[in-house]
Length: 127
Image 1: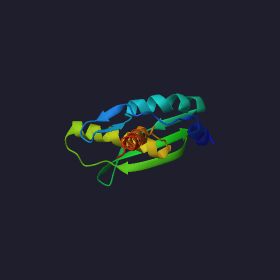
Image 2 (image 1 turned 30 degrees about the vertical axis):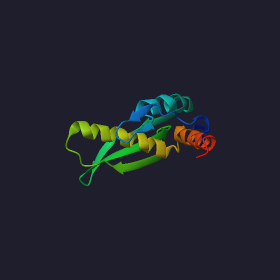
Image 3 (image 1 turned 120 degrees about the horizontal axis):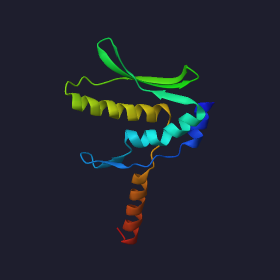
């Protein structure tokens, strides 16, 4: 039931970073952790994201631990990237999305607000 309490307490997370390549906004891993860690700590939950190696692949595990027992987990194979800096970026990306998915977190939908304003503007201009 601690996961239910966690989901009740975490609000939509504000997108605070910009991806210049795709011209899109997102929240980075540090913003995500800053939002969820205090609540996890209050509830006595621990998040671990170890990287393991299995069947020739690096695997990112995401685990939620309560009283020494894994109560929720997920695994995803990391891409086979030889450039260490690119691999580090991929690991950060997968960590963020694994946590977001595992905890059913939502991002603040600023894109919908932007689209809504455009529609209203277009209506007022008779487009």
